[in-house]
Image (cartoon, rainbow, N blue to C red; front, side, top):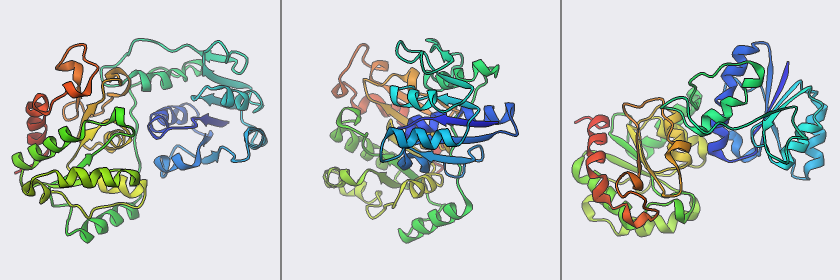
Length: 336
């Protein structure tokens, strides 16, 4: 059986979508699974043993992508993106079975439309994961608790150790990765609050070495943050640390004791690596959508409404509110 999975973007969505792959391989062990997505997001699935082939959305437009998919003669298409563009691809794929999310405008595309459930079945998964797993119901694959996983090659881990060595670090150091900023202003913990958080970490666990992750476009913002910190805190931060691409970041994160910071791609990656993760959610993101964990005894999720009921303002989420939870998390992850 030839199976096509469609999830055009984004990194977190692609990662969460990968939860259906082992279930499909278990049901159809001889199947050949292809994954159609934007090429820039394929890095997150590198090394995944359940993906046989990658297909990418064609830069020259929809018709080129449709032609590419049709030529592969798929038996089953599961469209987890379920937008008009991917619905058209599904419809003209030639696949006998086409599964996608039920919407008023998608019924023409899929012969097995799936209506999203509104309640989670597991305390540790989320609607984001369970909606993906729902796509397997038309195939009579029962629900099972499955979590995203990132796979690393041995050479990637060895390269990460070299990156640490270049910064006078090793796997024996008490390394903390910081998700310094969110992907947008509204998803970013206020910079002055992040400064206080970093100071609290350095004061409470002075032996740690802090690695700050941020996008190239956020370099100036990081410099402003760093310069606002006391000298004692600055000494715990490895300012020269940098990674060239997503795979290097993943590999270095796998060697850290924990990750702390803004909810987003970095926190989902660390959880998928089973690295203890302390996630600060922005007010508009629901815990029920993204607070999944395969390690509930270690991972910690914080939302402003847990401390200030009904708040929608990040300014209410003062660092003092997080202090107790942060210290408890550090005591579990950083060994004296």
